Length: 239
Image (cartoon, rainbow, N blue to C red; front, side):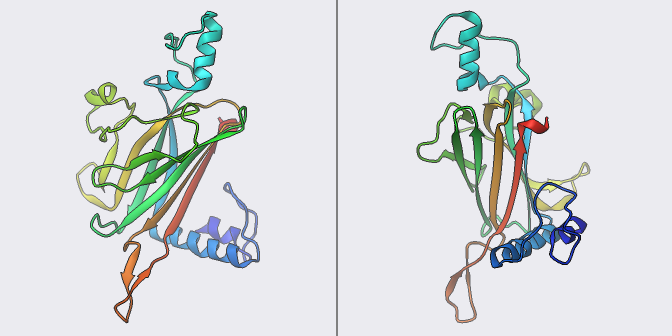
C-alpha cells in the first residue's frame, strides 16, 4: 500500500518499485482505483522464468545457433549443452474469492523480440482443469514456443520430464504445508519456452472477474461487470 500511495498525486510521486506515478487524467485515475483494488484484494499475476531444454530447441534463435555451431543446415535440431538464455515461461496467479462456477479470468502473454521486431502473443482463458493457451492470429510461433496441448498441471516431481515441464505446477485452492486453505485460487502453469537474450521482454496481463462477467442489477437485468486488471513485465537486461 505504501508503494501505491507514493504513486498517487497526493503521495511522494517517487515510486520505489517498477512503474510510473499516476498522472492527473481520467484514465490514470481509473488505473489508480484498479491498482488500489488489486492491493486490497491480494490478487496477483507474476511471470516466473526457469531453465529448460524440453522444447526450446524449436525456437528460431536456438535453431540458428545450432546450425552456425555445426555448419550444417538441417531441419532437425542437433542437441547442444544447456544454454542460460533458454528459458521456461510460467505464469503465477493468485485469485481471491474465486468460485469455479461463476468467477472468470482471461489474459495474454506477450513476448517481444527486438532483433526481428516481432511480437508473439498467447491468449489465456479459463478452463475447468487448466488454462487454455492459444496463439493470437499472425503471431510467430518460433520466437516463443507455446506449451504443447493438451498437458495437465504436474503434481508429482517424477512426472516432470514426461509432461515437459520443469517445476511442479498447480491449478487448485492454495493451501499451506498443513493443508489449510489460504483463501485464494492458485494457478502456476507453464506457458512455453523461449530464447531470452539481450533486450527481450515478456509482458503478462490478466483480467479477473470474481463474480463473473455478468451480474443481475436491482431491476433483474444482466449487466457487465468491470474486471480487476493485473500485469507484470520481465526484461532480460535486468538479469
